[in-house]
Length: 268
Image 1 (tube, rainbow, N blue to C red):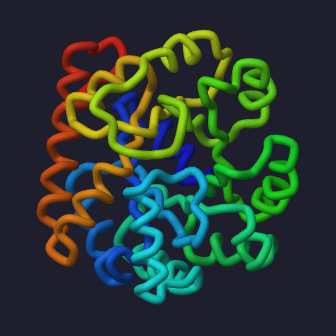
Image 2: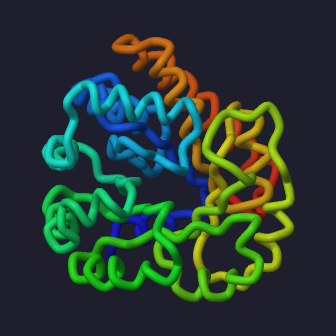
């Protein structure tokens, strides 16, 4: 069984999925941050592969991509790092990347190396629904799941997206690119309620505070946090491990409180 399926099958707890850009500010710091985030309570790690044109990203993660590229981080460096992390970390690890990078690397080679390193799934935000099949067919040969994204604009394609989904659904909380937001739209909750789904749904894009994470967890099964973490890394650089871990612990506490308040959904 893929580790993603195991993570969601293990218990009914709200899952915390954390995003980090690989190589920001350098590859060794990325490794250290991932270890600290797991210790602080993250359930799934999502690693962004530095890319020169990250179309789905807002300014915070876009700058992180530039720092990752400047640090000399490559796809192969990230494969090596994940392989090393797998000596001690068993939670699911995903890559978030763009279609052109996979095409340039080679689909077969990329999926094979994902499997060898210990990657469990990929998220490709710029890949049209009609073109997902070719990546999925190769990924399934190596037990690499491709995570589908469900956005407020997906209304007419919900059934198709959900029927083809695997692992979990990445539910985009608001329109636009990634980034920290002072307030989040709740229309995604209405959308999620209409979805006839068999997979967990995790809300991402814009969750900036522990309280926002708790509120979003009321609408879906799990939460994804990226820009808030990357912003701390930008602010603290090589001293980011402690503030990032503290932030993760604060989010974890709010999600646990959410579970206490709604023990029919989650048990602690």
